[in-house]
Image 1 (cartoon, rainbow, N blue to C red):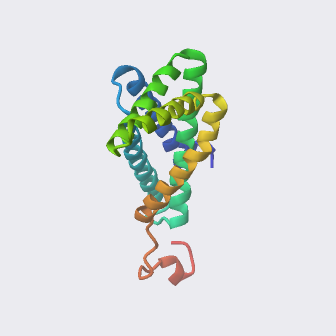
Image 2 (cartoon, helix red, strand yellow):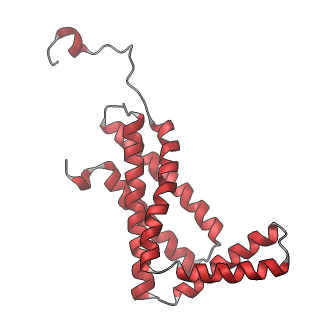
Image 3 (cartoon, rainbow, N blue to C red):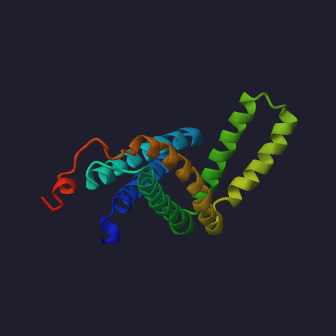
Length: 186
C-alpha cells in the first residue's frame, strides 16, 4: 500500500494543515490565550482521530481492533504534530522572528493569570514570572521545538489510547461467514 494512501497519513496531513491554520489565526488574526488554543487543539485532535479511525474501520470491513485503532490515531497525530512543528520552526526562523516576543508574552500572561488564580504572593509571582519569561523565550529554538515533537507525542499517545477505546469494533463472533461453511470463496 502506498504510504500516502493510508488513513493515518491522509488525516495526519489534514491535522497538520488545521494546526497551521489555528497557529496563523491565533498568532496574527484573532489572538487567543494559550489555554484556549490548547483546548481547541485537543478538540480538533479528537475530531480528526475519530474521522481517521472511522475511515480505517470502514476500510477493514467494519472491524477495527484496539491495536489497529491506536496505530491509526497515534500515527495521524504524530504526522500532524510534525507538520505543525516544522511550520512553526520555519515561521519563527525564516518568516517572522519577532513572533518569539509575542509568543513569550502570551506564555508569561498565561502563567501570570494561573498564578493569580492560585493566589500566589506578589514577590513569589515576580520571581516565577521572570523564570517563566526566560524559559518561554528559550523554548522557541529549533532544537527545543524538535524536542517538543517527542513530548507532544506523549499527549498524542494518551489521546489516541482513549479515542481507540471508542473506535475499536471487534468482529461479531455470532456472525456466520459463508466462506467458513463452504470452504470456498463465495
